[in-house]
Amino acid sequence: MKQSDILEKISVLLNEYGISFDVVQKKQLVDYVQLLREWSGQINLVSKTDRNFLWERHIVPSLIYALFLPEDGLSGSDILDFGSGAGFPGVVLSVLFKENNLALLDSNRKKCLFLKHVRKRLNLNYSILNDRLENRIKDNRNRFSVVVARAVASLPDLIRYVDPVVQKPGCLMVLKGDTYRQELSGFEIPAHILISEKKIPETWNNHFSYLKNKRFVVVEYTNV
Image (cartoon, rainbow, N blue to C red; front, side, top):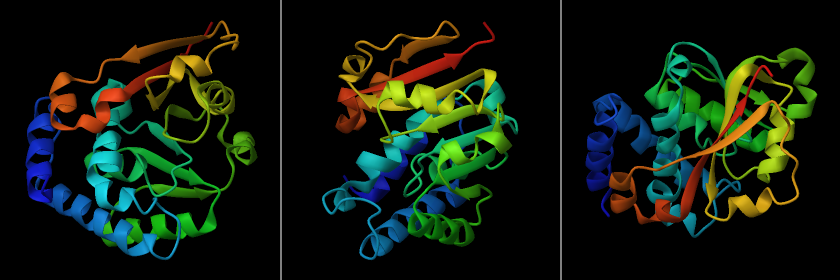
């Protein structure tokens, strides 16, 4: 699928959810994809195979998070992209929602240098934390209303890692493969946690087949 066709489909699909996707935002994503290709030859941002499918396998899946962000996640709340890596989904969310207090955390120094370069080139407004999450607990306890993550760890590990830094109530949002329930086998879900699966809209699945075996999982941390 041509880049122009992908952008047009994205625009239509986001508008169905009342999410703005203007000319400036389109250019930001195009420039981001170009930077990913340029820098991936120097550092390990994405695999060689994925460099030819950045839109389908990384940009579009990152956009899915925008569909399920809670209402208060769009009005200046603190959001953490845990294990951001090359910026998925954090950079994409920053393009869509500039008013968020979005922090991108990754322990890899070179990837954080890339994220800084992207922030400057695209004129975005996220902060960057070059550290491991466990080292940030003291200063960020119960800080983030929403935590987003992709291929960082198993779901049980993610639930445990995020617990100290997420607000109560608050949530963890993660895009997983369709076998994610196997990860929960033998895991005793704490009483203050609720796990649910949000259905990815058929319109997105129909246009982007990569999403068909993906599941959008929301972990709610309650006050119980």
